[in-house]
Amino acid sequence: MPAYPGVRRLLGAVLFLLATLAPARSAPADDPDAVRIGVLAFLGAEAAIGEWSPVQRRVQAALPGRTVSLVQLDHRGLRDAAAAGEIDFLITNPGHYVELEAELGASRILTLDPGPPRTPERSIGSAVIVQAGSGGLRTLADLRGKRLAVVSTEGFGGFQTVWRELAAQGIDPQRDLAELKVVGLPMTNVFEAVARGDVDAGVVRSCLLESREEWRRDFAVLDARKEADFPCASSTRLYPDWPLATLRHTPTALARDVTLALLGMSADRDGMEWAVPADYQAVHEMFRELQIGPYAYLREPTLMVLAERYWPWIATFALLLAAWILYTVRVEHLVHARTAELRAALAAREALEARIRANQEQADHLARLSVLGELAGTLAHELNQPLATIANYAQSLIRRSDNGRLTDDAVREASAEIAGQAERAAGILGRIRGFARKRAAVRERVAPGTLVAEAVALFRGMLANAPDIAVDDALPADASVDVDPLQIQQVLLNLLKNGYDAARGLPPERQRLAVRIGKGAGESAGHAHITVRDYGCGLDAAARERLFEPFFTTKPDGLGLGLSICRTIAEAHRGRLTVDGTGEAPGCEFILSLPLAPSASAPTESRSTHAADR
Ligand code: ADP
Figure: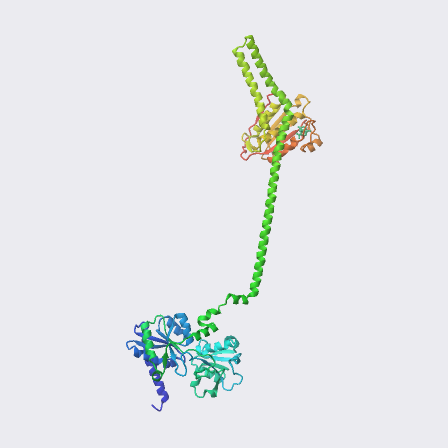
């Protein structure tokens, strides 16, 4: 076999692999005796197992009843296995450890001790290598616009440590380099890429370079630092060495046994040594500066950053918003002002209407009094008649009593006559009082025939020699109008009196009056028509023009207000007062038209004629 050292080495490696990996593969995940140590494959699986196998042997020796195995995984695999509880310990690079500490509660119990002159705290750095003699590249700042090879962008010593130094120079590897070439594991790929000239520079873990003989012949290190107690060339600050960490589910007793076992390792005997856990603050600072790993949240844009980035939009939006608010406030203000104006105008109008109503009522009242005033003379005469009759009967009773001829029959007859006359006088006075009283307008549903009968009775009661008044009611019995009865009586009384006045001094046959009650037709359909006809002097064209003007009168003692007020009353009842030509016939005809109340729609018409009894 000495003739085939290569084959022997290969065989040895295979046997070794079988010896170390077999338990890991065969131990089922739920084997309670299994102790699994996850390791980050750094130079590929083979190298990882080769590098960490002393750990497995040492722990296995300390825990004879357990099956200890190494599980080599990449970054993601190690994280997933830790999260799934498939490993009890993990050995990984400082950067990855800090991430798992934050995410999964990994807790270091030991840090690899690189041995003098290095210390566990200052053990890892990175070298940025270029081909020896490449004059243009001397410092990290020279890398701008150049091609850089890295094992992976997740590697700690292979990339992140250099990233921090580049960032300090204002270089963003993703943006400012011509190319960030990922060459993958093993790390020796970087040497090859640089040597071949595929890239201008490459990143390797410190001390890896020094493991190659005569490296200075081929490579140079950019910005090599003078670090005390550090024997290798480094382009970056130094960081603590790899930790061995427990996970949340790792039993404390097991952690203690493993710690004690590994602290007992020595470089001479086992090829590696472990020390108490180092301080990983430097790694935290690096991550914070780069805003990655547990500090990735710092990259999320703050309000300030957003404001700086989008200020033109924000300013435009703010301006628009301000304009909109101003506009809204102005419109609101205008609406308020306009509403107040309208309210004031409405209140003023209502006050005016109330005043007009009061004045109208006052005028109505005066008009009624004026009609009474005009009739007062005849009224006194009319009342005089029953009073004289009463006095006659009373004196006749006294006389008979004095003569001793007072019989019971005579007393009864005289008393009955006195009572009848007194009742007649009281009736006249009662109607006049009711007509003259002052009160606010009302609305009552009454039959037009009733209104006419009342007005005619009042008119007759006030005149000593009242003319013949024929009343013809052609409306259905249930026809009615919604009116103020007193106001309509006032209108009718005025019309009757005007008709009576127009025939004064004319022959008796022209002194009659006629009142017709019927339904309007055409434009006036749905209205009741009360027509007052006289056979008096009639109207000439000039008088017909001015008839309804206030203060137009042809009578020496007239006021000229009657017809004007009558028309106002008719219109207040949504009706009309018109005068009609009478053709050949003498006299004239006034028509009061009033809307019929809704229920007055009986199809049949009954007709009744009241002939005047006098
Ligand atoms: P007044 O009776 O106080 O004069 P009116 O307004 O009632 O006031 O009448 C105004 C005028 O209209 C009367 O003076 C009269 O000239 C005329 N008039 C009213 N009714 C008739 C009528 N039936 N026939 C003729 N003229 C009339």
